[in-house]
Image 1 (spheres, rainbow, N blue to C red):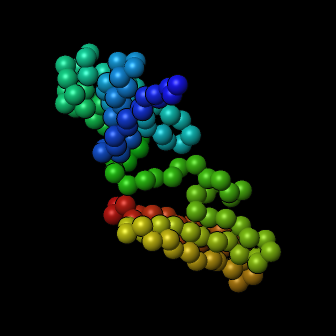
Image 2 (cartoon, one colour; image 1 turned 135 degrees about the vertical axis):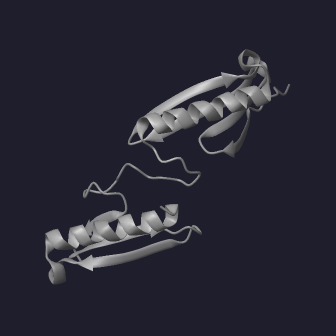
Image 3 (cartoon, one colour; image 1 turned 90 degrees about the horizontal axis):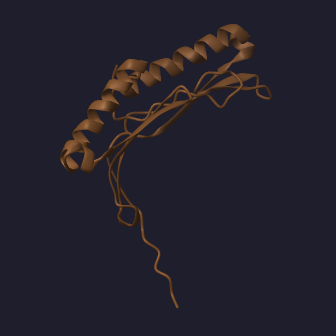
Length: 146
């Protein structure tokens, strides 16, 4: 005897907003999740409580925009990384001790990866780090068209 597993259908059209339709739990609505500097803000907007699919989407969009404004996140449909996985603490800038340089990486507006490096031997550690951070900031501004 074969047991049928119900699929949880999720649609994504708007940044940070996902459609959830799960018949077995009678759950229909929009789930909003805004992440910024390691903190997550989330809320579910039920079709039943908001007066339908479209009304719940409008409520979800308004809530997302209000939360982003309140926490200081730039309203854009482009992906923004705010938490660094490097020891420098700066997104897109990492120290390469073996090659005595800071390596800078970014993604441009068309989604293509870019890389460069700044020599510690040539500039000194502090100046090289500042220069690497400036390059990263400039490339991110270009991507977001700020």
